[in-house]
Image (cartoon, rainbow, N blue to C red; front, top):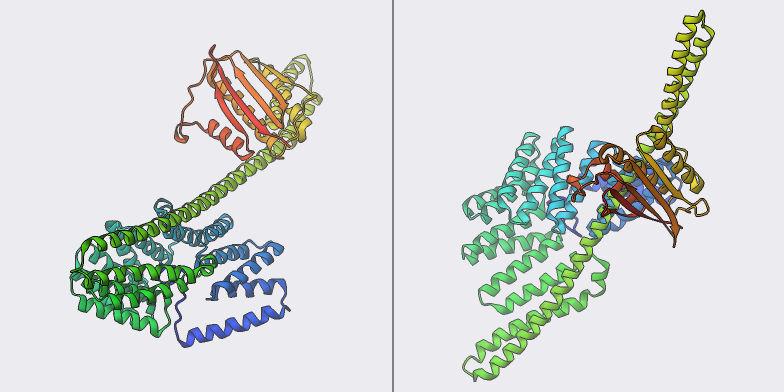
Length: 605
């Protein structure tokens, strides 16, 4: 199930003590033993690793099994198993709170996802990462993409899960109207497929939404009903969370007695089942309640417990190395705060000047500590956001490269078909006409037919060559540029002059660069012919300082350069995409005497 409350609590794994769980664990142990023995064939090893990666609850084991599955799937060239490997590796890293690496692996899984269920599944996982890092726009975008795909497949369960997660995201950022809409839609779907767990989670979140909106009566009723359903389903983690929500309601009502009762119930249940995150949350709530009541000693006791369990939940290697130091620091800061309050109560009647100075000093130390800690958190968030942005840009660049490669392959196939099939058929037709020539009138007609066929063959060959030019290395690129110029000049529509020194041939760093530049030049010439009303084109190619510099210039009416992707034509977007992939730089140059010019700089070896 993809509901975040059940499966996306970082570093936490909810254990349901039931016969089915125990039986599943026995099966997993048997599979793990079979894998360790190392006697499995590759096909069987893939199946075993997939089961272990999918069903293990230990994040370190999930990570190990998924990485092994990736290696085996690469050997067997199995995209299905490779998808599972990347997806489960992302899940393991998510549980270990390494969100940027988790996102990278989810993108790798998305790249090879084939069926709609896989696409919807991985889109939800990507959205969950963005939600956890407060990247609202990307989170909503990927949730909606997943919902659209899964609705087409009529996958009601996963549509309901995605809707719930989207509603939960809006709840987290306090957009309560949107949270209510998506949570209710999810609840209707869960009810239609008789999914009690999903229905219970929806009731719980509806309770939280209503209470945040000021409707405590409806909030309490929904939370109470959710807790009742979840008790029968042994969903103890969610019960603990919703008990804290009930405590929040009574805390807002200034009824600290009932608020403490619900918080204590949550703490006791979490301790009974070893739920560390929920133990941490309950201790924090009780610390706040006792501090509001003026009992600073008990507040400090619960705060220490909160810090201890919070650090055990955050299973991050870098945090583990400094966990003890950070815990001592945060507890000491809390202790300073408590000591300051006690000192003020006991020495209220003493001279105020000395205590004002001490208070200001302690406040300054605390403010400085908070400031430096806040700056550190901001820097870490910026680094995570930057890594995720780089991963997404890389993913989009790979997709664009795949599209262009597919286009070139299809053009090559069509060009070969034209040359081999249509060209051969026309040549055969020409020979038949020659053989069947008769009297003088028939010979004149035959000559006209042969002339038409020769023209068609010539045009067909030009089209074939344009679709699939023979470009291989520096000499191939050199020849292709001059052949392109010859074709333009033969058309009689415009005069084209090329300045390209054969002694300065480029050595391309990217093997795809020659074809990309050829397509760009073709697009520029096409734009000139269509829009510029030009009479001449000048093309200069020079190689210097590990770069190839290209200057394209026509003497037409010029083109107004538009900004923004939405304002650019498909031709200019294609130019920009192709040059971006090979790392080239380019700019439009409009000379003072009119016309249209483009300067391109391509990196070489």
